[in-house]
Image 1 (tube, rainbow, N blue to C red):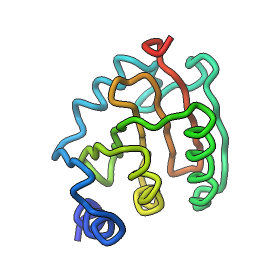
Image 2 (cartoon, rainbow, N blue to C red):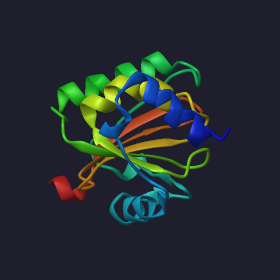
Image 3 (cartoon, rainbow, N blue to C red):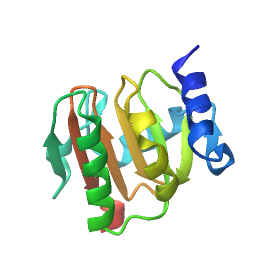
Image 4 (cartoon, rainbow, N blue to C red):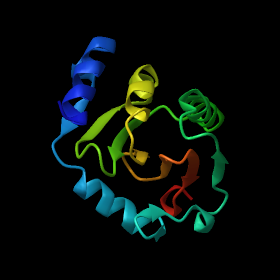
Amino acid sequence: MTFEKELICDLDKIIDISKIYIEKSNDKYFANLAKIFPVLGSKINWKKVPESIEEDVQSDDFLSQIIFFKKICEKFNLSEECIVIGDSAIDIAMLMSIDVLNLCLMKIIEIPQHLYVVSKDYSWCFSFTMEGNMAFGFSNRSR
């Protein structure tokens, strides 16, 4: 079973899967992300994102990554719809609310890939890497 199929089955057990809109390709979202955030290779260059927040944990410390996500969401009152995309193991894009993502983030973050969570208007973005790097920042669109 592919990571995508396994993820969708796992998510369906946790939440009503109809609360997540799934697109078959994440290409357009990565293209838009690269237009709005500075990139270095295939990743966001967080050093060039003003006032970005970066933390590092052990690569398998998923709980700390979830705590980071929830802490940032609370600090900046993030509650809108978001887009969830991975850069290798899954090619789908998942659109959902922050509340729904909070319910299923553990299943998504366990997949070995770099994960991005971005607002629908690209005003903010999270990244979680396989190496345990976590980052959050606002784009110029939010200023």
